[in-house]
Length: 245
Length: 223
Ligand SMILES: Nc1ncnc2c1ncn2[C@@H]1O[C@H](COP(=O)(O)OP(=O)(O)OP(=O)(O)O)[C@@H](O)[C@H]1O
Ligand SMILES: [Mg+2]
Image (cartoon, rainbow over all chains, first blue to last red; front, side, top):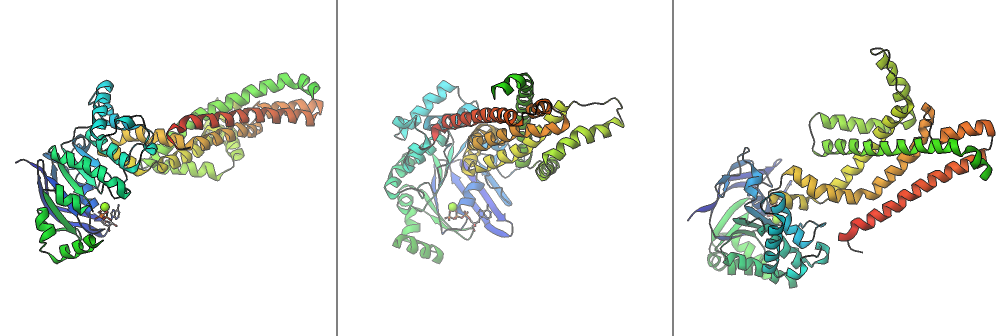
């Protein structure tokens, strides 16, 4: 199996505050990894280091064979292969759904306009929003916006997808539709790193669940191992606090 | 009223031409200067960012009247110590003053517009592999422009009105021409009603244009 992600000794500080305190992790091609943990434990920071939206302060990160932590690396080239989905969707508000999908491929000269448009429509069909192609973000529900955001990331044909709490900003009735799209993506063999509070999704879809606390990977294993028989006290405490509600 | 118009209109029309030319030119140059100053500030380019900050500080911190006198009378004096034959027309000095003035305020307007575009969209663009430059040009600036249209037009209106200050350096704009006229005819009341009417027409046109542009640009917003 080729390794899609190789992280070793990753550290990240904001000023005096050390948020990531030495993370080692390898992720296989096609693997779906869910990252869980209490608020403020560094999950988002970790994810954002993987495409250098945050600059790491120590250790090495390799994604897709590219050394992300190397300052000389052309990060824009590497990012073309790393899709990211944000909690707040972050769609381009002045562009239609279709234009959101076409933007990066056309700007980066990956495709001609006509080809990008065709691809955009295919992706909108895939996320069930072909009838919303010409809608602006404000005309879409949160769930629809997030599905467009996923499609926008897919438009660059990434090898790996990063999700940062993709359903946390959604009304409960819209969570399902977004998780469904992600589930299909996982079944298609996409390598995925998902920060989530959706324990049901993690249990169903993840190949591996990571538990992060205070900037460290405290425990990891199959969903069964983590949810049914956690070994660490901190994992147990966290799970009992989230599963109760 | 009509009598005054008949007597004064050729002078006033000359003044109007100068006013409109000076204002238009200064707005165009001001936009360019403001954009450069703003981008330097936003991109935090070393050294240049201090220059940009000093520029905005000086312009905002001094009256335009003083700036105009300084640029028309003060600077040429100094330049003449090296280049004895140097001269500058009131029009050129006036346009420089107005452009620098508009540029400083536009720089601040652009900056606030850029900062109003949420960082989420910038991160989304960067995460797709777009460079900081392309992200600025294709994602941030179009939206910042939209946000700033009302403030931009407001600044244009101020620039149009500020041309009248340039009377003090002898620019033959409409107020100057009107004063020439009344110094002979003494029909202050009528003449300055005509002058005021001219400003009202021009500025109302700008306001209408602004509303129109805002409507056009707001295709992607609610309401
Ligand atoms: N840009 C920043 N500057 C300073 N501190 C930051 C910054 N970003 C995050 N932090 C801090 O780093 C810590 C980890 O934040 P992070 O967002 O990674 O947590 P998280 O696990 O994603 O939490 P949540 O579940 O609430 O999203 C927090 O204490 C946060 O305040
Ligand atoms: Mg987070």
